[in-house]
Image (cartoon, rainbow over all chains, first blue to last red; front, top):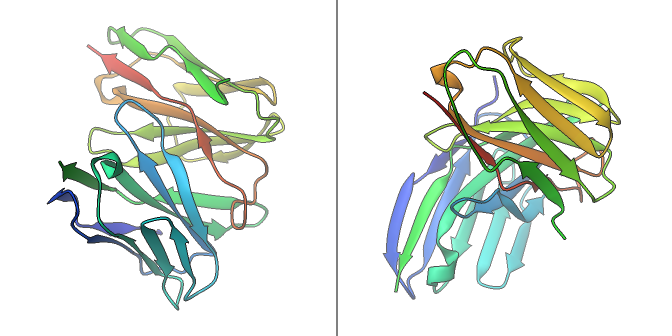
Length: 113
Length: 116
């Protein structure tokens, strides 16, 4: 059974601080996605990483896919209150004819003004 | 324009009742999904349909029956509701079955189901 773990589970920081959240698995994934979910809403995709070692930047957010495609990290620079939300990583593994996407348990981030 | 819309937003019902949640997407996508998010925010896939054909059924009890009248709609009917069914149910869609590269999941805003 493929599982994704995320750490930390909860994170509360002051505005302007930097932070990193992690997504780990013992399984290899063909791609990994990061989503942000705000209260009362569905998850919204932030990025997809496909190649081992790949680094993608989205403004103050930096995403990295591990060389072995088993783990990923999300680094936020100078966090702002608008970054508050639940960050979910999702790994896709190729089945016979479709991708099966599984989600990690999420990191709940609170950025205090 | 809402890309993936599901109704109702909130559903409160008694144990043993039968209820339905509707989902529609106006993105022209071929694939639709139902996910369940429990109280710990863990998001787990239940079903996936591609062009009205069932692709994924993740050992969900038979009391849950998805229905796809066309590729823009995927409704979820639940019979004999149980306390453990309380959760937030999300509908989602993607262009194709291959989410590995540049496809992504578009989620609805969720239906919070409370079984009393």
